[in-house]
Length: 248
Image (cartoon, rainbow, N blue to C red):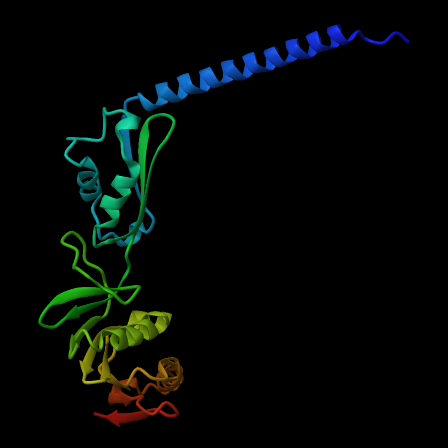
């Protein structure tokens, strides 16, 4: 077999390399052209999505106003003029927002995903505020009301963590979450007010909360079966091992 001349081989390799460079150059040019054209495209639409729309604390109009940022509107401006991280920072500074995500789709639509904070209880003492799912204070929404237990009595900055512990115990149980309408705090003890029953629950301290709830549910099932629920004015759960009832 005749060997391929070295000169011919190098010419072939050189031609192939030039061809590849040319192709990559064209692709890079087209990408840069397309990217530049995309960045200069005018934004035309805003879509706001709340991750839990059944319990809104923030109006869509409020989100829209937060996004304006002195531009008059985020519509009819270019994609490259939009600072997405700054928009997210602005939204996240709102006291009702846990986290947000702002993005721009290929067709020029600005999308906003908003995860709101979740109120667990409403405190009404010398000030009024919600306790959120992290145990932190958050303001009352001027637009929407949320059905959560109302906490009154001795609620301070010092015992807020303990109050939240009781709130968590109540709201983590579906039966108690639906039944408890109020929590009265007296020093370090708690009295629970109920929606459908005439009696109150002397819950005691925040300790052994889950066990106290299980004890109460066992009492409730028996009293319901015996049709004696209407006879009581107080159910005492302070001792975790038993339920003590006081008749009217």
